[in-house]
Amino acid sequence: MTKPSQPKLPTHLETRNQIGEKLVSPSASRNSQVIGQQLDKILPIGAHVLEIASGTGQHGAFMCALRPDIYWQMSDIDDASRQSQNAYAQEFQMQMPPSLPLNMMDDGWADNIVPVDVIYCANMIHIAPWQAALGVAKSAETVLKEGGRLCLYGPFLKTVGSASSNVEFDKSLKTRNPEWGVRNLQAVKHIFADSGLSHCTVIEMPRDNFFLVFK
Image (cartoon, rainbow, N blue to C red; front, side):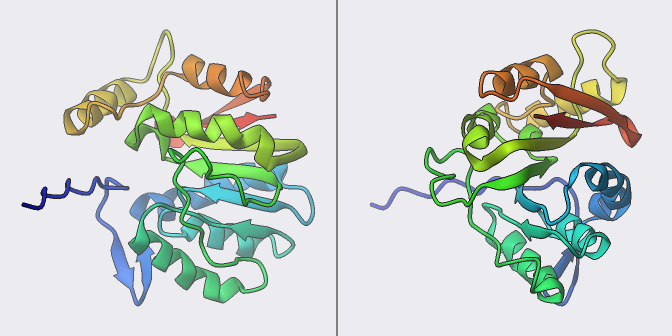
């Protein structure tokens, strides 16, 4: 008798619209500009970027339109998301190659990745097991070029004085999956410091989110 397969966990928490093969995320539509303002300050001319958990692909498309000089590699574990990412990439064929099926919980996820200037990851580590964040940290120094940076965007909990919205969001996530949760900012800093990214700049963003830059 065949053992029933486990239900597939969601890779996003919102209802996405669809236009052709492109998925449209309400949150990405809302936050692309404010995130783009921060990334624009960080990306060197001709930067190569690896985006982890690229979702619909809107962030990469926004940045490539903003910065025609950059090269943006998207990735995701979700087939439908990668299909959407590739649809956005059709508009930026010189800047965006096909999306990669990367899973941060696979030990060898970075084995064939060409070193990049920036790793970017938004709204992933709170809707994935903690091992996914550890997987990013473990290989970040290998994937980044000398002087490279890693950027994380999303909600985080502070040791003292966390936003009430993030505390409630953390509780909600844990009811969906006990392995999920809004991550403690100091714990996140710690795992990346252990991987050689010991300097972290914390930038407060709208809606109680943060933009972290490790180098």
